[in-house]
Length: 125
Image 1 (cartoon, rainbow, N blue to C red):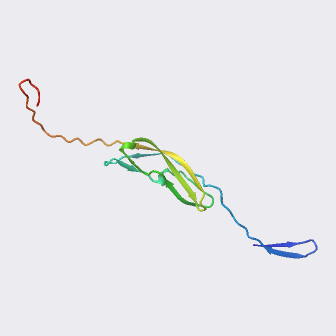
Image 2: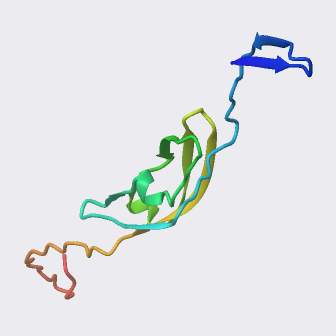
Image 3: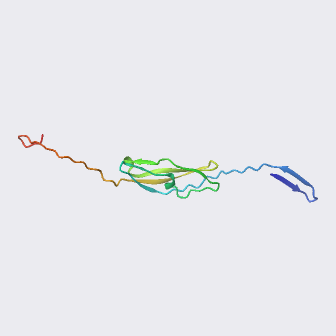
């Protein structure tokens, strides 16, 4: 950038200056709670996009990630996850959300016929 200075007598002088623009403002991270249902195999997953609730940054978002995306039967109920938002200049913000894991698939019952013999006292053996 060239800086030009003119005094009141019309004398002019110029110099070059370097202007460095710095983005040190973290993005705004916004989360929303999500409910997921276990599948027949007992697994469920959620994406960062599902938890993201309009996170933004004036210079742009480079990435949005979630610390946990997979859930199983041992995690039925409320689970806290952290969403990390990184802007294009490396500034980072986080927010937390609740992923509620629901198991609404009934178990499969498999039956077979059985013959039981009683002993002299009437007890099964």
